[in-house]
Image (tube, rainbow, N blue to C red; front, top):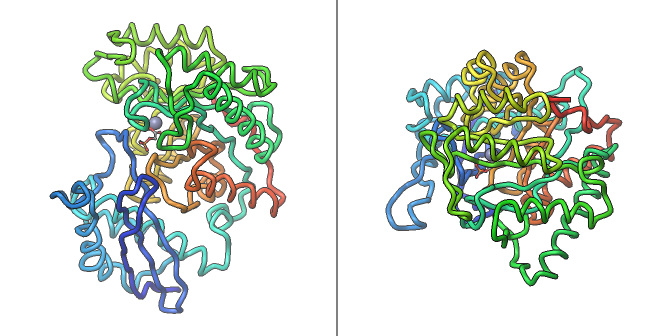
Length: 423
Ligand code: PGA
Ligand code: ZN
């Protein structure tokens, strides 16, 4: 048994320049491991609560309270626990918090501890994290969804759609998917430059969305795919994250860019029209988190043709996945550890998704660090898909490059297009 000796938190910085929590666990045998909490911008209402200090310093976003909780509450509770009993570690975190939402300890404190624990356990076993997670199971590298234009809350709401991404459906390997996507990314950059609209990048590294309508963004993405020499829908297809909870509530949706209003049926119709006209294979949060009827109706209408991903709707919660599967809402689940608060919660949501026959996508947040744990998580769980943001900004390439290293140094297969749930 390898016991935890101490747990130490520190303030580090995320990709948007805000403070976040890092935790380092040290075992009695001297082995250490770290966990780095990411941070969302377009968060679901039911996510684990991030603990921020409030007040005026750093816009109230400092994490001293979360760090204090790590040192005064979490460290004593975890001392002496076996590092290989992740479920017990996560149970202690959950019970110590006691709120059901991590509002007391802080979801940021909890997830950094949970991530640090799994990294320390893998280090203690002398294994890369993916291998520690996979055990004897044969696993394959995930199919990536990669952002070309950022929007929504990640680009000052310049356009309403949050992520305009591509999936290299024609790729036979992870590294080939990255090459194909890089061609599309730079093709898109050239188009924006020709138009005099190259204005840098949004939070996740996608080009800044200088468009006069949401459909202009979609048209431009198709042009970028063609400009890169690919057949849209055959070699490279579109994946969208509408993030509709950001502009929809109580069955009312407002696309600010076009000053147009829709009810739930109208929003469904608009999106079904896009599915007809554009080579879209995956669509995330097409309706708002509170519009379950809309999600059910949309899944009924389009779920056999495209992957319909729930993010804000599921918030990586096993019970919410079970309920949705009974009702027929969505057919794929986005998995973010900090929505759940612990990796054990994420694994439960993952296993319920699998039981229901839903697709699974391990995802980064819009506020990230150089950490590449999610790549090992996607591979080790054999999740099939990975969403990280774009091709630019080092907190994104840290993940892509780690996946390339893994593909290069181990005889691993690649999920490819088979990972898409509706196929
Ligand atoms: P977030 O965005 O990290 O800001 O929530 C990512 C997503 O919506 O998938
Ligand atoms: Zn999302």
